[in-house]
Amino acid sequence: MSGVAEEARASGQDARSSFARRVSSGLVWNQLSRIIEIAAAYVASVLIARGLGPVEFGTYSVALSMVTFTYFATSLGMNEVLNVHVPRLGDAPAQVAFLLRALLKLRSVIALGLAVAMFALAPLLASLYHSPPLGTVLRAAALYVFFYNVMLLLEYFLVGALQVPRVARARIMVQVLNLAAAAAALRWHWHAWPLFLTMAGSSALGLAWLSWGARAALLGASERFDLTPLRRFGLTLWVTNFVNFFLGRQADILMIGYFRPNTDQAGCYSVAAMLAMLCASALLLGTEGVSLAAFSDIDQRIGRESVGRLWNLHIKIDLLLSVPLLLLGGLLSGPIISVLYKSGYEHAAPMLTAYVVVWAITRALGGGTNMTVLYAMNQPRIPLIIYGCSGAFNLLANLWLVHRWGALGAILGTGLAMAGSSVASASLLMRRTGARLPWDLMLKLAVASLPVVIVVRALRLPPGIGGLMVQAGAGAIAYLAAVRLLKPFNESDRNLLSRLNPRVGRLASWL
Image 1 (cartoon, one colour):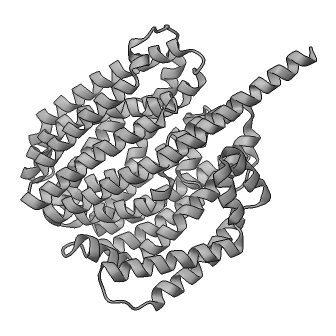
Image 2: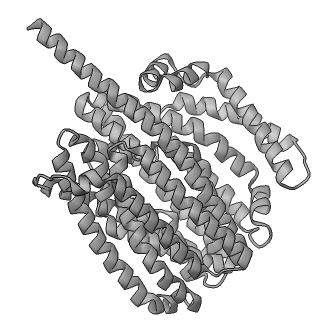
Image 3: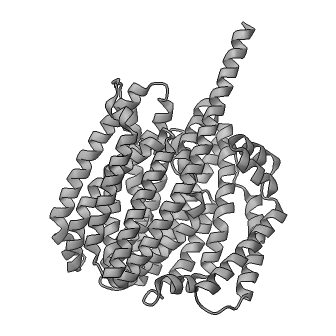
């Protein structure tokens, strides 16, 4: 009996070790691909903004926000269902196949319906926004709505199955094609509608690539099982995400476009919000999807205390990687806007500084990581309540704030809503897991930020890309040196990181 027990224990250890390797490998692939993808997407957005100008870029941003709205309307929580339940059904590939086919069929039908609706309602929406060019742009964007939404479902399926390399290659391909289209728009002075047509084409190619990667589940044997609990879970998440739309920048852009039509406000806000989000998330993109699968597995196999430990460590990594970029973005907001966007976008600089403060507070309180853990703990109703209250506050507050102060009012309303949702979700997780927010690390990073401010402010360099890079580089070196002196990770953190990924563990030990 002891031999059997030892064999079972060894088998369990091998399974955990294999899963840890797959998670760490997935994180590396996801991080690299997301960095390349977001970098390409951001460069494309800069080229588009410069090519279109602030007013037409505002029209483009409003149309893109409506496309994003269709994503929330079509998702029905399917992406999160695949991320959470594909790992749990790993020993039943026939059930995984049935789940994917059912969700793919539903997503395709809804996406097609919304694409047709956007095409038909384009003139009405343009009239509502007092922007005649918006109608033509929305009709072109309707095709993008279909391919974009269906492609995303397959992407989440493959990430949930930890087939991240294929997803990484598809993401990069799509964004490189979009970048080429943006360069063509700048070179040949395209308007917004051809851009959406080319984005639809690149998404169609991405869909074909991901479908080939998921062919085993799409074409293999399937086993029916009761999807009712999964549908209930997904619908709860769908309502949560739908409500969360009103907490984000896309809803703000729609509201700014309505209250400030045919001005630079929506375009400048879009520029500032995108830059701030990149500063907050650029070095954390590899955790998307993979973190949800990892937290879900740990909650099922080990328990809430381990979930709490990993949550605390996750927030530490979030802060460590986001603070330097946020700090540099806030300190250098004027030069960044001037170098990247040239003239016409000067109003985006104070908006960027304000949004950096919002993101710094949100990261310190856990932000989206809190919601990821709650989903993994199979408690989707809590995020629904939190996001519902925050989204309702943001919507009502912005009706007055945006009407009165334009884009800066939107940042104030959204910032208060984001901070409130982060406080509520962090409080719940601390009670349920016994973990605590890493206040000690926050204090260390506040101290580490002081030399960055001194170095950046002391360097008086000529305007331009060269001076900006020297200031940013000097600030980054000052931050890294200060962090290493302050030792952000304790022994428990280093041990946990070493188990997840030895290379990351060695880096943590060096810090």
